[in-house]
Length: 245
Image 1 (cartoon, helix red, strand yellow):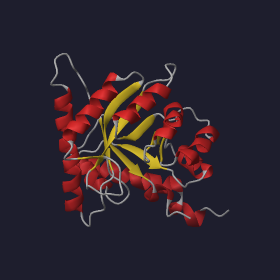
Image 2: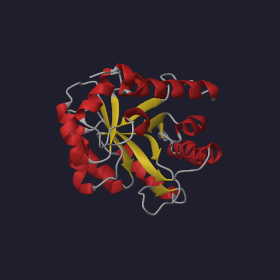
Image 3: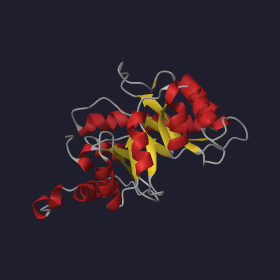
Image 4: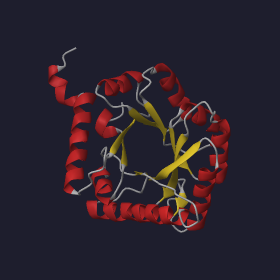
């Protein structure tokens, strides 16, 4: 194989480009988080070889959308530092696999989801990190709690906090594509404000100290606007792995 012609086209090179862009956006928008905005490499429809290439370039957090596709990868990749994030639609019949094999589930939308994940997470495992999915653009084809149903959001959040084996980390959203930076930013701002309000609401009860720390928003086409708006975690696939074959 001749790598010289493809040096800028390798997964390692694209990862470096994405990381540089993230760092530049953090500086530009004064987003100096202690450990920086976290990068989740979205590895759905990608091979184990491609994931291993990313791991060799120091990428250790991966996002998967389909349980059946993810489980063989999780089994095949033996690096214990790799962290698996489930970012697909939550299905009750898959809760057992999610609870046992993933480190994060970012798409919880109901109390039932939370109860099932808690039930199947074993006490030998660390707590399962949970994000609640918000449907920012009220799209009928997407799951998530809408901005209008705040009482539902608070109820799901309180249920997660009360359950054993789960840790509520924050919110996740996949907004509808927007044509420019300004509109992307405005949409993401809604999630940032919702996140701040939720944090306040959860701490209104006496003797509560809930510290949310994760705002998971921003993908290949809009992650700079997400960083400007306050994200702590971006989920990027195509910009790292290239177009799907």
